[in-house]
Amino acid sequence: MQHLERQVVVNARLFDSQARVFRPGSTLVIEGDRLVAVTQEPIAVDDVARTIDAGGRAVLPGLIDAHVHVVATSHDLAGLALQPASLVAAQSSQLMAAMLRRGFTTVRDAAGADHGLRSAVERGLFQGPRLFIAGQPISQTGGHADLRPQGVKREMYCACAGLGIIADGVGEVRRAVREQVRQGVNHIKIMAGGGVSSPTDPLEGTQFSMEELRAAVEEAEAANLYALAHAYSPRAVSRAVQAGVRSIEHGNLIDEATARLMKQHGTYYVPTLATYAALADEGARLGWSESMLDKLQMVADRGLDAVRIARAEGVPVVFGTDLLGHMHGRQNTEFGLRAGAVPPLELLQSATSVAARLMGQERHLGALVPGAWADLLIVDGDPAESLDMLASPDTGIRLIMQGGRVVEDRLGT
Ligand SMILES: [Zn+2]
Image (cartoon, rainbow, N blue to C red; front, side, top):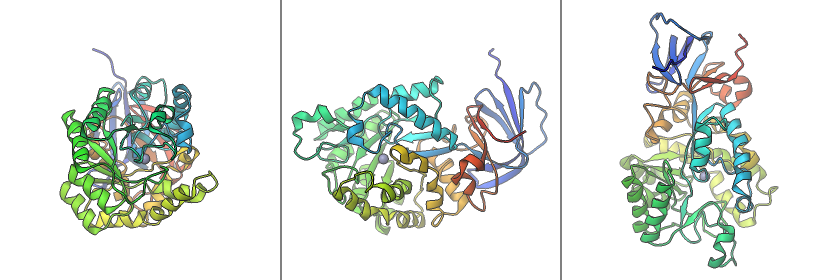
């Protein structure tokens, strides 16, 4: 039998992310890359290779960001589509390494990353969060992933394909989803309404027919996967929910009736406030067009209200950010942006246990329980009071472990 190295973390004020309580005086036993025991009782462990003394500090599950694009290495998505994939991958590796150092041991990529990047992380070629991938997003002609400027004809599609697969009609949608399944994705991303960064679609419009939306969900579920939908308006969100998607991404314009429908259908909500705040600051300077900035204006101010509305109706809300290019440095601002609407421990659940449930990974991720990956953070301060320590990870997070491997150690012991 292969010998697995055994490590223990002692004096942990463990955050039980499922019960939303702290368990002081906890000991965690790790074998290889998994947790094997977690207890508040005295426990004798022999053959220990390494003991980490948390010193009574809070110990949290590794964070999960449920809406990122690790290939969005530039804010200029159309320009990015013209770069060689190898160059983008090299830049993505740096971007992922930085995410990991900010405490995100897992991310759900909401389009762009492929199985090559996921394998590179799994094999240790790139340091980065565990990757759950969507591959290419599926968009109708003129939809949110159709980045062709007006005037570019359909025939020129290949020259500026952007991130997405364009599919029109039930048959093409089924083929597009099946192709992503064939490419080994973890979930299917569909564009169910207008977007801010796309040049030609109205933000409040709907995209795809109900038949197309249902076909995408059916094909995803046929492969034991799920679909997530990009949508902003109550109308676009409601249609996607009725078609059976598992999560709504962004959703800034939702109202109470839409949130109630989401609750009824068990739909998760993944707001992404950080990117609107970043683009409100920088969009004009980055050369975004007038129409894109107008669309940004429509959604930027509504994001926090949407979180409040969803939460009040009992919709499970998940942590997401959706940043582009150099703005990834703002990933942890999402905690502060939501603090006005969500109490700290609930916010922490949104980035751990609730995110894991959305992904169907609750036995492996988002909770420090036996059998789960040994992904954990040791942090300063009291997360029950505020998540300031996560907003400033360089100083607030003292240790980051991913799969039993310490990737950052500022404990100073
Ligand atoms: Zn996105």
